[in-house]
Image 1 (cartoon, one colour):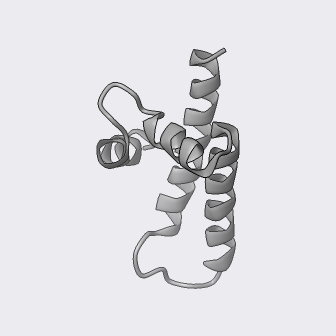
Image 2: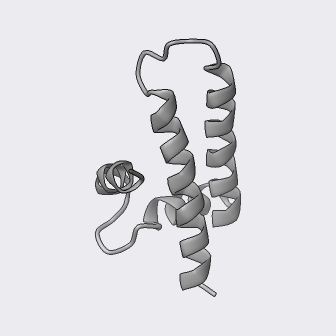
Image 3: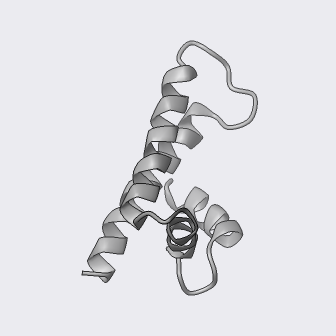
Length: 84
């Protein structure tokens, strides 16, 4: 399920009470928008999935990458819903 990787990673990346804090801090550090940060992260996951075609990943499974991609998309939509 999407909840498990989100919860596990949210614990490592985001400040308590703000699941978007890692995206906001990355955007501030890079001088770009949260949209640009999320778009790059989605692009990286898509590139990783493309590179893994026909291989056996050593660290993160293909399914984990797919779930990460889904979580990024859900967080992006949620971020805009809460910050509209």
